[in-house]
Image 1 (tube, one colour):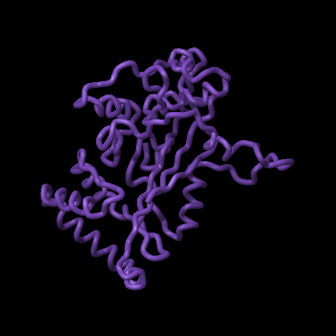
Image 2: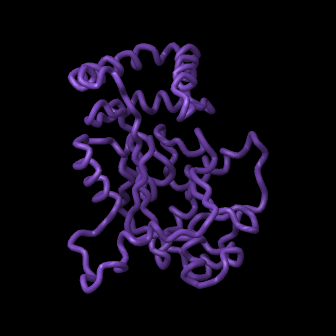
Image 3: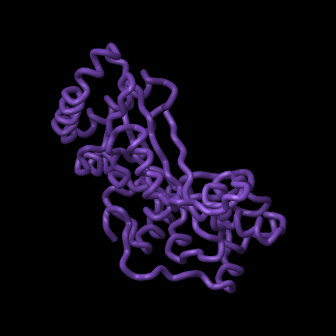
Amino acid sequence: MGSNGERSAQPAILSAAEVASWLPFTALPAPGQRKTRLRQQLLDSGCSTPAQAGGRRWATGCVSFEITQRCNLLQAATGRGVLHERDQIISADTTITQIRLGTGAHLDFDALAVGHPHCNRYALSLVVGDTVHDVNVDRTLTAKVLTHLGDTSFPRTHRRAARKAIAALLCRHPDLWWPTLKALAGFAWRARRDLVAARGRVHKLSFFVHNFMDAQHIERERAHACVFMVATARPALDVRAQRQARQLRVRVTRSCHAPRCGTLGSTTSTSR
């Protein structure tokens, strides 16, 4: 697999029988083993790389508590009146292109992996004034920091606590001092005019692109490496069961044995 997850072989598609027999997780692993399962699944799927956050930083990417169709409207014909065709196919790549055009920055969506690269793409940026700057300009440093992070928590709403967590991380790993200082100096130089204009104020902005599959063409590898779950009356369920349940018009609690596939296109979320 390349850095952008490209593969030469055609993906294996789950059969109807395999979809029907897909089982939910029936037991919660012990606290020390909760990342092991995901690490193994990503390894099986060829997605375990130095840049992979899944199974290292967290055991589950997201848990959904409701069936939602908001992601499925991007490539559907809904809401277009008599115009039932699109001039441009919406995919993860075209969505990322539009994000880069909109931000005016060549954001790196492959420096940090979040599960399967055909499903999820992530980029982290810093906003200075009205200008967006990519954070992951040095992939080697990104992978090195990820290796040392472990379970380090960075509070999103408390800057002082986040700074303390970063300082503690650097104190524990002196090998990060020089590359981090070099990266900060490079950022300060690239953003020098923006930093002066914004009086030193900097904000974090992250971009997350989800690319769900067609419910009739669920790829075995991507389903096996899924990092999203949905909570039901029964145990935790692979998120692909949601779409399957809606299509079959059955209650979600009866769809616990079918993997879910979302959309033909992509959806994008941002967070500060």
